[in-house]
Every structure is written in C-alpha cells, then in structure tokens.
Length: 243
Image (tube, rainbow, N blue to C red; front, side, top):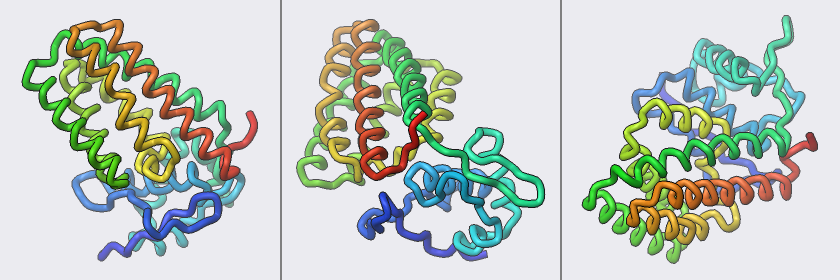
C-alpha cells in the first residue's frame, strides 16, 4: 500500500508548515514501530490529547496503512504506559506530566554521561578529529538557521561518542529512553540549536584530555540543559500537566 504524505505537526495548536511531522516511514524498521513512534511523538506535542481515544480506523486512514500495524503500534505504546487499553472502547491517551519528562532526562543524562566517560579513554585521535570536524559543520548550520541540519549533525556527534564507548547494551538502553521524547522536534524549540552548537565544547575538551569524570559531567549537564529546554517549551504550549 502506498504511504500517504504525513500531516503537519501541530505545536500548541499552531500548525508549523515549515516543520512537518518527521517520523520516517521508510527504511527497515517495522511498520508497527513507526506507527508507535508517530503516535508517541504526537502525544508529546499535543496532537493526541490526554484522555482522548486513539481511533484505529482514523489513524490507519491518516497514515495510509492497514489497521493491523496501527493496532500493533498501539499495543507497543500500551506496554510503555503511553496509552491505556479499555475494553470495548479502545486505547486512551495517558496524561504527560513535567515529572514524566524530567524523569526521562534524568535517565538519559546518567546513561549518556556514562557512555561519554567510557569513550574518553577509547576514542582514537582520528575519531576526536572527526568530532571536531562535525562540530564545525554543526556551528555553521546553526549560524545559517538550518535546524534540520543541526539535528543531523548533533545526532552524528552523539553516535560517534556512544559507539566509541564499546558499550552496546548501554547505548541501546539510551536509545530506548530517547523514543519517549520527540527529539525530532527539537529544531523548533527555542535555544536547542544554540545548545547543540555551544554545549559540546566542554565535552570535547574532556574527551581530548582523556578525562572520564569530566566527560561524564559535561555530557550529563548537556542532556540536563536540553531536557530543561524541552519542558519549558511544552509548558509554554500547555502540553504538560501538573504531577
């Protein structure tokens, strides 16, 4: 079945036509996982409101897929606690609180910090040079206002560091926590591109110095900063509930 063009993202009730929904429906990932990612992101940015039912038929029509991967995707979200199954009624969206988002970033900061600490003693000189080169391109993209490019280059920086840690299972755990927050929407968040351009300096300095403790602290502080920007953005748009 041909895939329909995905609808534009709505942030705080305003359609952002310049930043469409970016959940990728190509590649090798299972379709049910892509549906889950689409709804997961939609919950976080307010497209699916707390207490509302996610209608299988409507969602399948919107995405241009059959109802089977939609049901499977909602089952994934049910196992995560993002939606609740109610017999004879369907899946209802669970509210998202600031504490929920804060907790996710506490976990992310811890894991990312540990990965950076391990990478500090394992990164090769060519890999350190590669990080510097990517950062130069990232800062240029930030100066041009190319937020999509900033996203891509930031992802590449963290990928190099996480891979160099030699801790595949821990990196997998980090990826699992990342699924819960709409990282693909950070480009519309005030301060995100700037944080990506400027927060990396102390991380790189610690990696160059082969300083695990410094790398851990610098990376954790970076993730904390990003998490704070996201929660502030979501609160400004009324997308978080009080705990």
